[in-house]
Image (cartoon, rainbow, N blue to C red):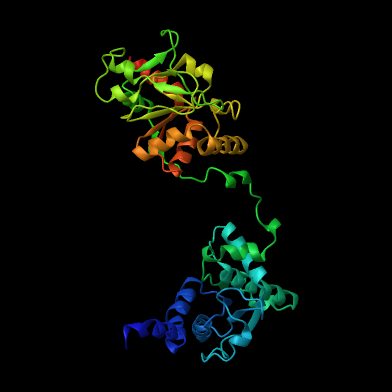
Length: 400
């Protein structure tokens, strides 16, 4: 037999006598050993192997055991089982084994499957159909006055077994197609489905002390100590700026060492323009989302202020990512606008093209987490600081 014929051979093997014989050899004895007092065995019928083999063994040990076969309603299929008219010509010796045939609608099968899963038994629609068929059989026996004949003489209980032969995952769409909307728990915070869909990663959140080390700890600008502020204003007005590279090279900021020479160079407004002139060898870009007032009090030298407050008042003051879905949506939407059409686009594109990391800073680190995830989704190597500027200042002050 060729390799190419093996899948077909394997598929046909389920229709051979080894199918039902394996259930007679294994499934039946396992059930009886675990539940010797069994009175009813119920399963959905697909190939017919399980109900034929298992039922045949159980009846050989106790002929009073009732074997219930559960079928689809004709024209209303549930994945896995068959309708009776497609099974009755099966070549397996089922006719002397199956006592009762029950039919279950697909909606009832999916509904019972969902109930099983909610009770902790993760099972699919075929399993739900088996249980629904069993319950229908018990209800009919009760209404017909036959239930007592199935009860154990000592305990009065009716011991039943039904099979769970599938999982729900591959049929998830079917639950929503078959069942009404009110059968599902309401979706809370549905607004989050339309925002913040990019990946989040804790590795993108820097410990404040590590961030302080990265910033070389002492390259801070303090407006209370300096006679001028170097503020890259990238708000809705897009105030133009110019690099102070020439001033640094002339000795105005002598003493810079290593990479810090080109990382954090202050910039100051220089007339009216429409673009940013950045140091050619910049190795890190700092994007500050805080307000102009907070930025003027203290900021990373050379940072670009792209205040979110102008677009979403108060947003940069902190967002509870796990407690305020509307705030997350509002902030994310405005960040998306800012990074898509705002004045920061050019700076971010240059950072992306040069492979320059972007450190995003806000008040408490929450908004910058959103911004970092969004920028990462756009291919920008963005980072944030855990706890935001509040924690970064503390780490820097300790260093100093």
